[in-house]
Length: 160
Image 1 (cartoon, rainbow, N blue to C red):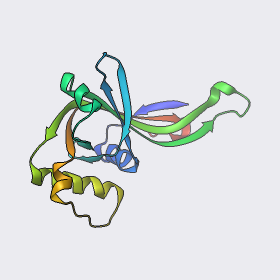
Image 2 (image 1 turned 45 degrees about the horizontal axis):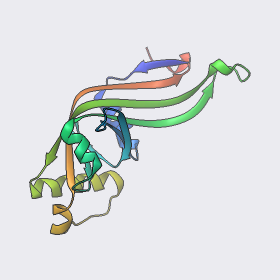
Image 3 (image 1 turned 30 degrees about the vertical axis):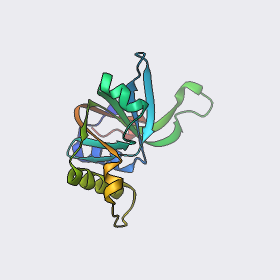
């Protein structure tokens, strides 16, 4: 089974749009990895996230705002030979992004970003009350580095 690197921005965005959530990795207060699933929106090489206005994640980010965000979709068990264990693989596509969290404080910007996040999950028009906007922390992560790969491809599936 082969792995290929994907560089086409349209294919990368397609992978992201298929994901129901992303995994956000932060460094905890003791210097250890801390990874959590989060809802998101993605637009113009920026990942948007949201959380409660205070708590452990925000304490961690105050100490170190650098994050790694992973998206993964596909997950199909494939093999070259049924009886050969090493020929099995999980066919999937994944993206790893790195960046630094900046918090959005402007109320209208927060409203717009939360609307963008809702579009990731529903076509329904959504409204946000002023208290809801005030009581949410909106994260903005400009992607500084991104890699995308497709795993578990048979040689016949690789386009030259």
